[in-house]
Amino acid sequence: EKGGYDHFMIKEILEQPSTIFDCLRGRLETQNPSIQLSGIDKYKEQFLTGQRIIILACGTSWHAGLVAEYIIEELCRIPVEVEYASEFRYRNPVVHSGDIIVAISQSGETADTIVAIDQAKKNGAIIMGVVNAVGSTIARLSDTGVYTHSGPEIGVASTKAFTGQVTVLILVALKVALEKGTITKERFNQLCIELAGVPDKVQEIFVQNDHINKIAQKYSHLKDALYLGRGYNFPIALEGALKLKEISYIHAEGYPAAEMKHGPIALVDESLLSVFIATKDPYYEKIISNIQEIKARKGMVLAIVSKGDTMISGIADDIIEIPEIDELIAPILNVIPLQLLSYYIGVAKGFDVDKPRNLAKSVTVE
Ligand code: M6R
Image (cartoon, rainbow, N blue to C red; front, side, top):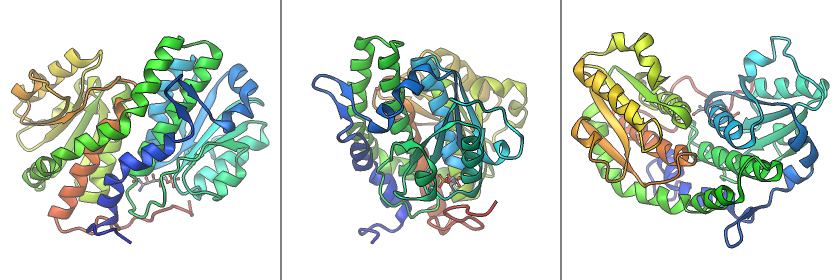
């Protein structure tokens, strides 16, 4: 059932070119670019007139929600709030009739997310599920939805479900933005074509697996790590840090790179690793100066960079290359080496990466 792999986690990481392809199949048309999502068509009016979107989720799914916040606000100009379902359910939140709630869940069985959407529904909100497990509780409670089609995810650490969630949320954002007229047809076409290229580009990253494994061996003794990114890649920093904690039992924290100066930089010395997501985007120059600040304090730096980057390779201790892609879609690619890094470190330390201690695949009690 592991298909010849040592662990479900690596099987599921390596499956991503095909799971992302399955997620796009029948939805994304690139000849004359268009997006079919019946789950959105049903509530088209509400999406076009909705005053705000509230995203509810936990853990890795919450990180997908944060990526979506940036993307939906940019493309659709609709304000988005992202809440931990566990907080939302207990704080008498302001929900208006007509608000759109997007519930993101791999399992569709997360207790806090179920209760949170139940409450929002009672207040007249429309619930759209972004769920992987077909027929699960959240899928059934939702008014409408878009499945991620990532297939069963067995490893406790969410990997392919996350890239499926981000892919679905980009499709939703693009479709709504085109209908609303908040994106030009030209930009829409361009992003559709870039999105269709994602499966091949994920495959291209895997050429570096041995290289990433070597980096993992080098850093397996770590005690602490910082993950830093900006813009669309800030949530990827959070997700990378969560993966490292879960699988390698190494303390890690994710921050927006600019927040470094507001506290975390105090931790930097020769024993701390900072993992930068530093692919080419409008923040590139700023990220370089953040890397220099870490190096000036003798910290170790691993950077995720765009293929062919020569600037950062001269400053960072180690780099992993990502194929060039539009910055809006880059988070899907950028998370892949971070999944691999935590996997290889976990394996190097002899841990049960499919079943990390103290964790359950789905948290069905609060
Ligand atoms: O099934 P869900 O997506 O609702 O689960 C949410 C979290 O419990 C889950 O993402 C958890 O954080 C994973 N262990 C992350 O790898």
